[in-house]
Length: 423
Image 1 (cartoon, helix red, strand yellow):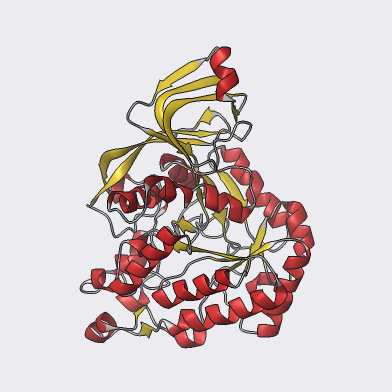
Image 2 (image 1 turned 180 degrees about the vertical axis):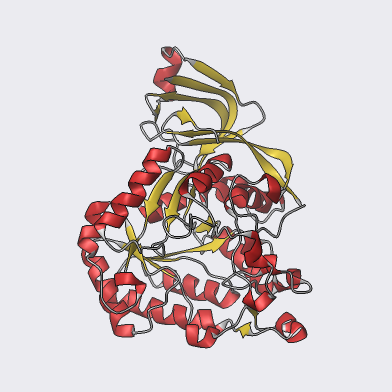
């Protein structure tokens, strides 16, 4: 099928393009506009006047709950939610049940994703068997099965020798290692940032040192092994500085931040509002501003949703006993566009953080509007606003702190491989 998207503001961070022009799609790929203008007989024409046309979004961290926790969500529901939000590719951590630690599990997750025919699914392979931090997986087999990266999810590997050997092994097969910087001994049973709010509410705290100490260890091992590494989420100013220093020293490392950490702080928790219970915790206003600066300067390469859908009862427990996480995939684009509206970053750079940069981190051929690339395309109105109503979420997760608030960026069309996908 041939599609012409007319008069849209085309933003393609790969080429730095930001201009009003037409986009041509033919046989599932982006067609060369110069050739298409001369002879292109479209089957469908879409008028995108006043709208942005950009690559489909790539979410580097989203729990889809299947397999193992289908009572919370399913691949069907969460991939539909992704499409409704302009997200065409989803990176899935290996902490499913069973764990994604064998080629069979990789094939199973990918095949289920393909059968649903919504967003693309990119499963991460496990670093250690069962994520137990003891025995390394067969990373060569995981790569052959389709994994472009490996991770231990949120299960921290305490044994420094094990994580060093895991990095060496991954480096041998040119696999990126996704790392979560958190010292669980320092974290303890903490659930909020160690600061004013934890003191006032009397809640167990997570000091920023729990992240910074773990990050320092990981960066030292990355430098020693030469592995290509990605830090999945950072939450404080000191982490931004450590990533900046590592890049200046030439370490092959990238970093991401969740969209909600760029807009919220510990002050938003109020009086034990469990919707703001996330891990890593929301930190100080100064930390939030440092994260924004990190995104704007390029120290932080990508923005993810850290999508974690929960049932309604999961947030009804007392704060410290409630489940942590936000069902954030449907607000990844709005919260990213909001950054641009607030002047924290240009719209082109903001879109790069959820398209081109994640694609480079994963080493996949999407996230671009370059002729010949897969036609994964998002069309949205950057000025239109949407009232966030969790009861209307496509996701089965209704746990979101922006419920009742208005955010910019309304999706008009989402294409995967040149086919418009609807919920």
